[in-house]
Length: 103
Image (tube, rainbow, N blue to C red):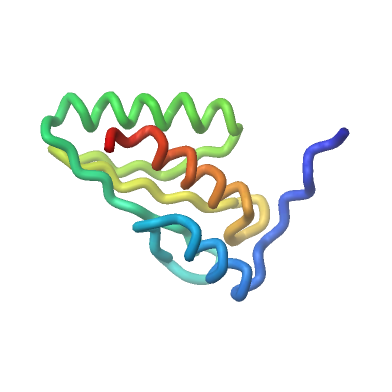
């Protein structure tokens, strides 16, 4: 069985998928549109551990986000460069990223 085709989602599909991932929002526009979420931590070391976990996730998915790390915060942005927009893979990655964040 082959992997599903990765394609750009239509605007209505993006809105429906966005409703399924809590706290994620749209960032950028056109080909640079991404979904983005900020994660806040008690300590800088916790933010570093989270960044490493997202790194492992991105290798597993073969899909790599933009990560912005500051003292106790990490902003994660997912975008599918190959389709010049957003794909289902971005939303799957967002769901898996949320699972890495301690409740």
